[in-house]
Image (cartoon, rainbow, N blue to C red; front, side, top):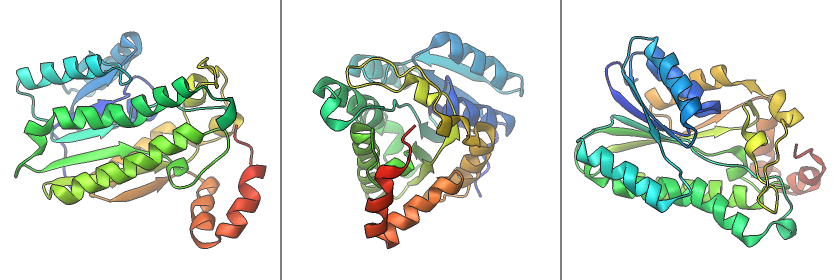
Amino acid sequence: MRDFRGKKVLLTGASSGIGAALAREFARRGSDVFLAARNLERLEEVRLDCEKAGVSARSFVVDFASEASINAFADQVLAEGLLFDCIVLNAGISQRALAFDTDFSVDRKIMETNFFGPVLLTKRLEPMLRGERKVNMAVTTSISGLFGFPLRTAYCASKHALFGWFEALEVENQNITMTFLIPGRINTPISKSAVHGDGSSHGTMDAGQANGMDVDKCAKVAYKAIARGRHRKLIGGGELIMVYIRKYLPALFFKIAPRISAT
């Protein structure tokens, strides 16, 4: 189990939800944290929480749907010579719309934020990732990255894609230890910021989300998975059974999945 005490950890999507909880967990365990997200005000709140643990914490405003924003952040990191020991790629947006009701521009926005953003940042950080130096990486996917689910077409696609790209990256680079965090329903505000087919915000806390696993408990499970170098870690409650039904009883899955509340 790797000890991240005194290590530098980058967390994206760190202004709320799993990203913020993980930032506090790393800080509590003695890591210096570098926090990236779009909302500076919420980032600063998380940063101050982390500093209370006696560690160094910095905030960076980054829009992971914007290539220019990601490049500017990467330029700053490389110019300062920062070397991260662990990188947690968590930034993302969800969806609440049927496939045929979703404008193609929204499909693109979801893919840009959830998939192409993390890929671009990883490519830009190549100098610190390629070579002999050991680096832990974690990617927050979803159980929706393991199967299709209603109202989540582009979201599912983006999460499926993360598995393929980052697993291949790990195979190509033996110095990288990759952990795929696979949450089910976690009590976070992700449903509030989910997008409808026209790109408007869902703005509602879904019942499934509200009744999900406590986010701080999720962060503790996720931290241990990363520290232990677990390749994949399912996190959640009873909803995780769908993963096994899809794998071992696919015919049953396709019968019950359309009947499960997507909110």
